[in-house]
Figure: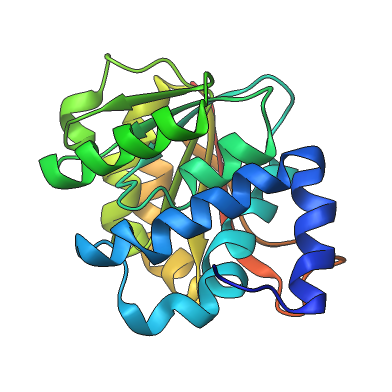
Length: 212
């Protein structure tokens, strides 16, 4: 079992509430079959809560009630499954092209009994028109310029892209500005999620998209 530090336990309680046991089961999947099947590196086990699950789950505070979310390049369910566990009011579609990852995601979703999750095996560009969403999320997929081209079209002209990024977020925004504008982005900003919960808040590039 992956133990939580006191700080992680407090954060998990605040983020997941009465669904924290589901979050713990998800982390156990990551630490066992997730490693066995190559979705997570073994060195990440001590940091599964802080660096991965909590880091992703706090993004939920940026999502409106009842939103339909498409998570691009879900991989091990980061951030998609974290959001679905933290926010049962959301409907999250995990978009992942690799079969072995999709199989693992299906097994985890079934074990956790998550009725607010759908899984689509496809590349992002092939999912356009197949997924209804008002929010698109992504983490560790690609640089913002190419990521915007993969994700914004999924919104069908209106919605929000939430891209989890690192310290270079500002530079990526500058480089991708023309592409974002061309795709219908009307407001791009770097925001912090979980500032009052985590020692290191999560950096998110938030792009609002609207038909012109």
